[in-house]
Length: 296
Image 1 (spheres, rainbow, N blue to C red):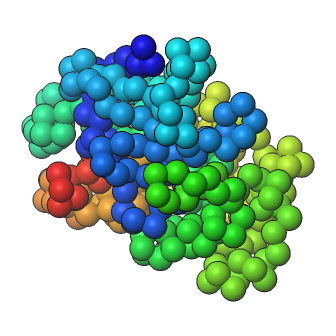
Image 2 (image 1 turned 30 degrees about the horizontal axis):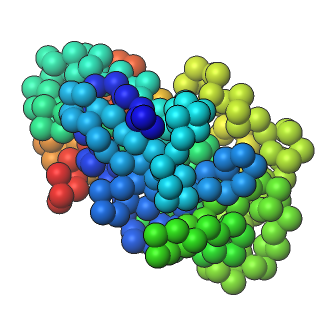
């Protein structure tokens, strides 16, 4: 059977819809209880679909490829990718234990038990985070949609077209004027194209970032033009699920802190405040952001 068992506790629906802020997202889709994402499988763009067949304490998903059930062999080959996308290595039980003596956070984790937001590929995550620098989430989604439509590879499935996010080689050759016509600022166009070129030249090693401790990864990433601390922390959080990557300068995180603790803390003070969650600031940030959602 093409089933992949996952680590409990895991709330599939809550976790998958966590990042959804726009129906215009083209690289992944959450609809009718199914999560779909374009991946490269056997050297071609393919739509991976995950169906929940488990429970909170016994989670599991089944796999489809281009709307057909994956074979047992395909499922076994895809299992590491699926577990990575679904943040199966995230130690939420360790997190719950660590914040048990913090009443507001403990109450939030009880309400959102099993929340484990899915991850996205690191290059896509970095570009998305750059899109979101100092603008509204809605405008950032519009920029990403335009970028993906122009440069991504489309795959028709389930009545709509999903896209593979543009590879670095494609964006390295992009014309800045085309990005400007899509309403990218000159800086953002330069950042994305420049980082793509450095990936192609192998002067930027995103794969190597995964092996670095969080502080070293932040130092490394911020050495490249276009990547500030917020961008680095959010990229590590969404792309790698780094438990210790707290984007303390994120407006949503600060808003949630104010709502939960009654304290309005700027970034430096929030970093001091966050010492109570030693090593868990990134997961705290995810739960804080979830607390702001009306559907939670």
